[in-house]
Image (cartoon, rainbow, N blue to C red; front, top):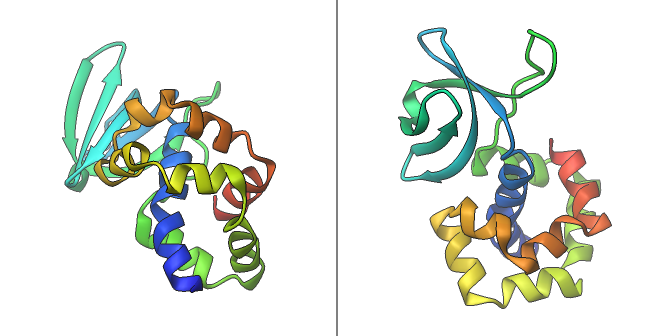
Length: 154
């Protein structure tokens, strides 16, 4: 049961992490260049980003070295690994985190999202634009239990 819940909630936690970080990010490319942009979508290994300087562009994930929080200083914050595998690995390796997630299975905000086919299809497609504006996701992102889990995962 717990692994099934992780399989369901893992992508959802990834989406909420991406959405909460979808404002301005610093994307460091393997060639050393950096782009300040919002991540719009990650699909089939391709990031769609929106930058004030470059507009909307697509980047293959193989070009990306790291993604950082955009801050006021020139030095970026520590990189964030937002891969589903990393999130699932972090969750499975932390009993306290596992307990927190298992406690979510009956949370009404989580149930509302998991039972909504439109939202779950958007999660599978990693459609950040739709999810960012969906009222159920907004409510979920403001859920104190989910915020606590996001903090532990990141």
